[in-house]
Image (cartoon, rainbow, N blue to C red; front, top):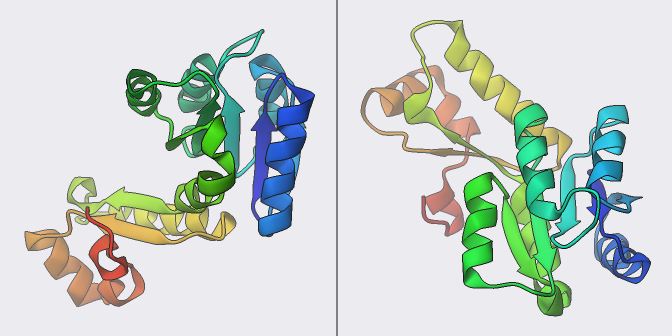
Length: 184
């Protein structure tokens, strides 16, 4: 069961988001009141996924994204806000957020965003298969996906990398986004 940390300074919004996640899925939901509280809870027991508001005191959502990327890079973060724009969504993604959902669309979009965030994508063109680090990187990514009840996807598996995956049999174990209707 994946653990989701919901971060919002509004108790009403925290309960709403937590309710969506608990009612429609099998997530263990925990709560934090702001970015500073979230960082404390992450240090105590890291969640699998973070869903955070943008506008909060004591570290806003973008600051939380930056801090988590620095110290806990493997945790996907979904940013939500009632005061969004396309530019804000781009900035959130550039800082390392896994997704962005406007608050008016939480009911329609949140579960899909969290489900996608559970998946782990590995750019295998950047993986070194000539020593154990490449295999270690794939095993680590596979375990991260399993902890989130997600899937491991490989992207850019061409040329020598595709040949290595085929020779080792890893190609049969790893999913390629195109097989699931996704575009890499």
